[in-house]
Image 1 (cartoon, helix red, strand yellow):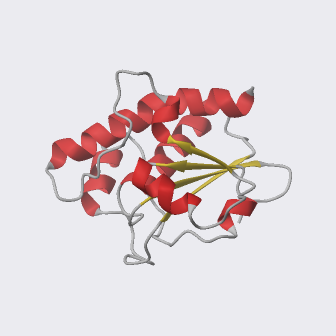
Image 2 (cartoon, helix red, strand yellow):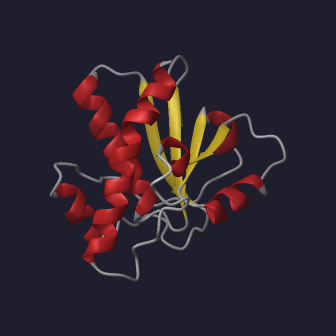
Length: 157
């Protein structure tokens, strides 16, 4: 749960074991490198609760660790309260965004896609790497890493 007087971001994917924990970890790593005493809170959740309590997929944890990023979060399902307590909710794909939008008609959080923070040369949806090979996990991390500067600039503006 975000604290008062800080900016809070929630990354959301389907199961909260690949893409959204990677978003949480990569953005935290980027912010810590720029401003170790930051007041930005970052979390992640899934639109389904199938993996609740489990760590990120071992392949995503390994790929992130190769970039110096530890993924320590545990999977949880997004709640309606999240849409009112976080400042910004970043969905990994359009299907996740539609699921989030159906949860409540008037969230106070700003809802965006990760691709809103990327150039036109990137796809609209962050592909789910779960059923693919290692290159899918690397590609997801590439997308998130490319989006981090724009996310940071958007909250610093």
